[in-house]
Image (cartoon, rainbow, N blue to C red; front, side, top):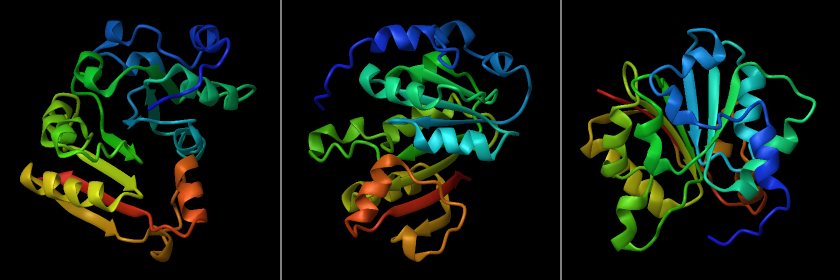
Length: 210
C-alpha cells in the first residue's frame, strides 16, 4: 500500500492529546489513561477515523481506541478531532502485529473494518481474521472475545467466517448486504460510504467466542 506523505504529520501526531505516544508503557493499565473502568473497544486499522470518532460521540460510557499504522492516515483523524473534546477516545500509531505488546487482557471488543484482504494465498496469515491473529487476540481480551467485522470483499468475508468457526467463535449476527438489513445503529467508515455509493454490498458479522 503506497500512501503519500503528509507534511507535518509526525509533529501533529506527537502533539495530539488523543495519541498514546508510548503505548507499551501502559500495557495492562490502559484504563488508567481514561481514569475509569469502562469497557474498552478498539478498532484495528481505523483509517481516517470516522467510525471510531462517531462511536465515541454516541457512546460516552465506552472507552474507544483507534489503531492505525500509517502516519499519513492517522493525522487525518487527528485533524477531524480539532476543536472536539472526547474524554473516551485515544489513538495509537502501530502495526496490528504489535497488539500483544500493548494490551493485556483489557479489551472487550475488536472492530475490524475493511481490513486489507491480502488476496494471495501465501499471505493469508497476514489477514486480521486469520487464526494466527485470532490467537494473538486471546491475550488482549478480558472476558469473552468479541469481534465485529465489516468488509466489501467477499473472499475475505468467507475466509473470516471459516477462521472464526475453526477458532471457536459463533455468529451472533450476520448480513450479506448490510444496507438491505435495516441496521439502524450502523456507523459507516470512509471506505464503506465509498463502496456503498458504488452499489457494492457490505458484508457484516458480529461473532463471539464460545
